[in-house]
Length: 190
Image 1 (tube, rainbow, N blue to C red):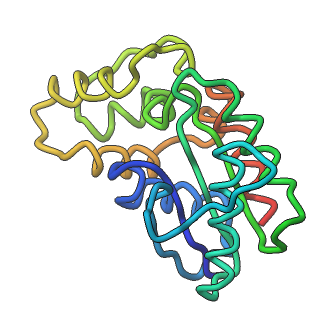
Image 2 (cartoon, rainbow, N blue to C red):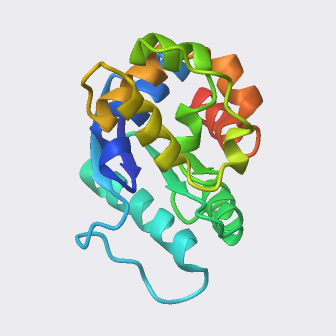
């Protein structure tokens, strides 16, 4: 199954979401990446809220490009309506393409903080268990601070990919039950 991975930022688009998706399902044979806000993909006016329309537009675009599925992740950023809109797009019959859509609570960076053993391994620095990752106000800043404390020189995007490759998926799902757990279930169902 060839999937189009759509997300918001460079950290997600640099292979972190693909790494996670491949660990969750062996059905992915190929992946390409694109930014959810790409000006090349236009939403249509009419019924539906912004992220619902954007997600459906990506489904239609992926089908037009010949993909078998869409894997889409956006950040909640404290805006709870995003989860509802993405869930509606996940269930929408406006497009028939297979999909796994998710909303990271508060942001994708929180998923990186869920498994301190993986962080310790990647950063080669003892990392204590972080408080509830989905409740951290600025998880990107916490990730940056932890990375900066390490003597290992690593770009944040590479750190994210390596952590998701090393992480215990059960731990990630247990510690991020609102965002990662439903997304993981959707990816597995592809």
